Structure formats: C-alpha cells, structure tokens
Length: 442
Image (cartoon, rainbow, N blue to C red; front, side, top):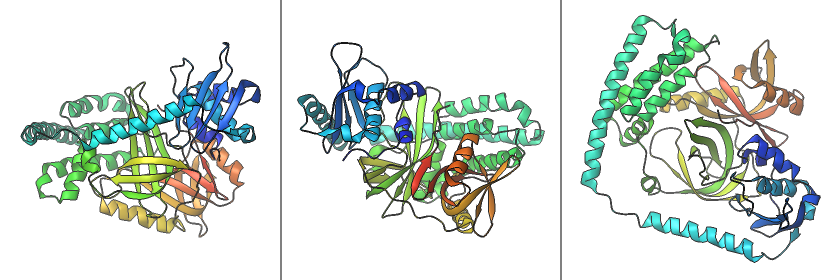
C-alpha cells in the first residue's frame, strides 16, 4: 500500500518553496520511466536532462530519501516528485521486487541504525569526578548570571515599563548575551521572546508582565534548587538550559504507542533550524513535545509529517507538567485517528489552569477542543463552543480564510497553543479530515 499523504504534508518535508514547486512539476507520468513499490519503499527512474535517468527511492517506514542526482538539497525535487506521484497517480506504481540499488540503500540504513544503537549502549564510562567539577563551575556561572539578571529586571521595573515598546529592539540584547556567557541558554531564550512580543497590540502589557514574572520565578527557583523535589530540580535545570543526557532520558521506561504528530512551529535560531512537534499517544493519551535541532546541511533524525501516525517508543524527560520526549524507532503507519478532545471551552480552560497550577513556568499549553466555530469581530477573532462561550484566538489571515472555506462556518475540532494572553489556532479536524497550515522558519 502506498503512502497516505496529502500535498500539504509532503510540502512540509521540503527544504524550501522552490523545491515544492519543482517537485510538483515532476508529478507527471511523462517524467518517470519506472515507478515501483513494495511494503517498505517506493522507487522510480526520473528522466532528467542527461541520458541516464535519476534513481530515486523513499523509505516508507521512516520517510527517508535517496536520489542519484547531484542536488545538495534534501530531499531533492525528485524525491518530492516521487511522493507527489504517489498521491496523484498511485495506480501507476507497480508492485515489484526490490532492485539491487534499493536493497543496498535500505540495508545500509538498517546497519547504520544498528551501529548507532550499539554505540549508545556501549558508551564510554563517565568520569564522575571531572563531571561534578564541571557542573560546579557551571553552577557558579549560572548563579552569577542570575544575579545580574535580577539587578537588570529591578532596574527595568524602577524605570517603568511604558517605554519598553520603543526600546524593545535593543533593550534585551545585552542581557541575553550575558545569559549565554553564563551558560544559561534557557534564560537567554526567554529574554529573546520578550523582544518578539507584538508591542503594537493592546495585550503587550499583559504578555510582558507575564513573561517577566515567569522569568523571575525561574531565576529564584534555581537559586533555591536544593530545596526542590527531584522532578522539580530536573524541570528547573532544563528550563535554565541544562541538557538531559540522551542516555539518562532513555534509562526510563519507554511508552510504546501509536503517536499522532501535530506541528507547533518551525523556526531558525541563528543558523540552527528548530522544529517542534507535539506527539499524542492513541492508547496512552499521553503527550509531549519533541524538539529537533538541525545545523545547516544536517538531516533530521525523524521526518515527521504533520498529521502522520507513527508506531514506536518514546521516552519522557525528567521534569514536571508537559514534558519533552525523545522518540525511538518511530515508523510511519497508514493508520489514522483523532485525539481525545475537550467537549467544550470550559473543560479546555480547566485543563489549561490545571497545567499552569502543576507547573507555573509553562509558557504554552497544547489544547484539544471539540465543536467550536471561528467568529470575527473587527480585527479580533474568536472560537465559540455550542454553549456560546468564546475565547479570542490568534490566527493568520490565510489560515482564517481557509478555515471558513473548509468548514463553511460549521463546527470543527481544534488544536491550539494557549498562553496567558491568547490562544493560537494551529490545526483543525473537520469531518474527520486533518488540516494544518505551514509555519515557515523565520
């Protein structure tokens, strides 16, 4: 059976818009002299400008690509074109035995995965004394950075917040760099988010004070780390910017399930691409955030497709509340399912409050709510449930038009990200169909 993907999902895998356009241009029978598949891959020969066609293959279990063309983009237009062919002309693909070049590539991938797993299991022993010394030095650096941060925050409040909008472009730069020097990357990230507030909106005062309050609470929590529980120590350290070792995360008990991938955002931090997905377990009903960090030219460990369902294990990081997760051996499935939704907005609000009570440092809460409509009042938009409760939402103009066109004003199910000032509408389900909107990197 060929991949059950949509054009939007395939486009999400592309490195840029030009590759999407070129890939769609190859979704024509005249471009391919061979189209075949089996239960673990699709492959084909795409006729280029040269005499010899390009050999293109897609691993349908892990959504990985291979092509003999010289392109430095990944996936290349031929790999994307092959997937677009799958959804547009599935009947043209002949079920066949794998040719040698396909088998060789898939076998190489399996060997590489096995070696990686063996390497993780046979990791070198840690010099605990040296590690403790490094941690102690970093701890003092972080404490020094926090002292400077809190002095900066008190000065900011003494001078008043009304002039922050006119200074926002440069106000947070120096103190953000100071947090980087103090090896407190989490604090630096929170400071950068202050710069990204929309200071033209009336809600900027509420958003700024909320973020400043959480920033100060995080700093104070770190200063009193020894008085916190083990889970809270892990949570605070992670939010400060300490990484949890992969081996430590995977020492816990994995959760095996079918996982629905919902996109949160894609962005660039300096030259680093950061993709964020929320994974929801069908049976466990557990959820977590998966962050993928990619340097230029690097390949993602998992090509997660928005709305796709994957079978595999996930490990939860130590901490409190909504946790990061580390997937392992995720494999694409043709299964589909909808998550468990809150029946109305009042239940969704209760869930939001419970998350914030569990972990007041949380910046965004993922919410699933059923039977809502999209309404507008001037430049403000709302979602309204059947009891006519309404909550303002942030939504891009193009997505708003699409939702109204898809639903015709009728109720739908929604996935949102909620914070103290607004809810952001990310994806919807209408008549069991999944719709999302691309969020291109900054």
